[in-house]
Image (tube, rainbow, N blue to C red; front, side, top):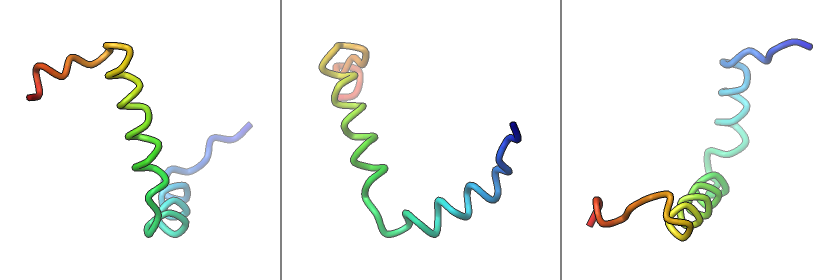
Amino acid sequence: MRIPNYSTWSQNYIRRYKDSEVFNQIFDTILNQAIEYKFVDMRKYT
């Protein structure tokens, strides 16, 4: 099994998703779940 070259992966990511909100949506979902399960203490950030 070969490990993908990071620069190749990065360029593909940029081409495919540069105008997309999909990764922001995934990040927001994960962050909201972390807050809900109290993995993140929001009192420190307000």
